[in-house]
Image (tube, rainbow, N blue to C red; front, side, top):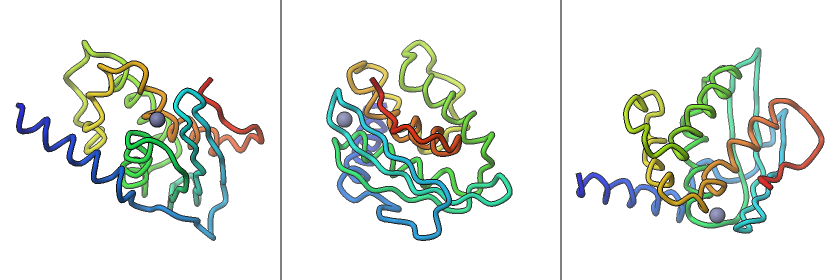
Length: 149
Ligand code: ZN
């Protein structure tokens, strides 16, 4: 188990240092900024949807390793998912990073499971969920910037 834990942490560090799908997306039809004042994490989500399906997603921003890794991993799992799937995944992910008693049943989250350890650090939950709050707001097309506070 300790070996597995180490691997997970390496994956977080790796995604934090070199985030995937980082940059602007010219074809985006939803763009949203999010901010986590608690830590100073800032993110902009560029989302392209077609007939209720996420066809492409990228992001830009700056922040701690957890916030960047979470956004990077999120963009990797969301392509091809329906808008309803995104909301369901966010609810599930939120349980993953907030409920330390709920250790099983997270297979559907795939590689997002690496962020499970965040549940033991309540101050970092908003770092991990900022990208999700932002993408859910992007899908609703409301004009207010997202803040985790
Ligand atoms: Zn942070």
